[in-house]
Length: 432
Image (tube, rainbow, N blue to C red):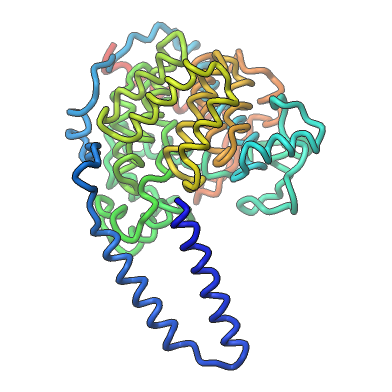
């Protein structure tokens, strides 16, 4: 990774030299055109590069090929829940995702050493036991709402964040197109509802706006296809298919294919299946292992999941396991699927099903903290239900969530859960 850090540094230095030349009255246009032409050619060549013969992994993009490379696992699980219990679990998943996201937003992108130091500076407990008292550094605006809606003094609802916007969007897709929706339907929903996006989603959305087919929208000028963007869109599919990890993973696949490839797709499939399994199993480890069985056992992500579980078993210490993860993925983007998935798994396993500990560890692990906190909260919320989430984590929301989606900006969390519950009952009816 040091090569890429050096490349980034040299590119910044080149821009600074060009700026200096302009300030001194030079015409830099010819050189700038030459540089841009070289970069465009290099990008084309980079896209053509293929794995070395000894790469050792098989990572297909097509669903049937993915299925052929899975290990054996329960695909349809009995769901021993009454309607009221299922609703409580789905509400718990929604509330858990909200709480983990809100806890993670103020320190998004920070590493675990910074987070520990920030907690100490604010006089907050570590492990974390409440929402942040303040943002680090200069206050910023988060998707047009004041930052105070993500810190303890100002939380009176769940503010707009992409980790929740896509969860709501997933519900809207299910309501409009049903559980048999297609990737084309997802593309239509994005054009209709999504005003902006980041990384892989931004690339796919821009391609859709240019008339590119949803099946090909991930393919054009999108080097983010194995980042975390699809991963954070996992949850609705798991909520809609409780006890049905294969069905949840298939819905996740159709969603992820719009913007991602290979391990980017597998990340969404994995967490969707984990959430679906969490409604039906007695412990989080079983849910994680069932989720892993929905992605190719020949993939790097599967290997990473298995390795991380082994570290947890061996270390029996969260700090030590996090240290291993930081060392292995040093230099990787904070938005990648590998490092963030690896940090979320120990948060779940070391929590022993305790909600507060799960979201606290996920956020304390650092990097994409709102994503990881939200995912951990969603999974544990599905496993234990709303009634077992400590009130301090959900009462401040006043049952209100806002988004930046077009024509869908404000919701009651209980209403989102009720609507999801209705879909989940219909989905389960196919198998019960």
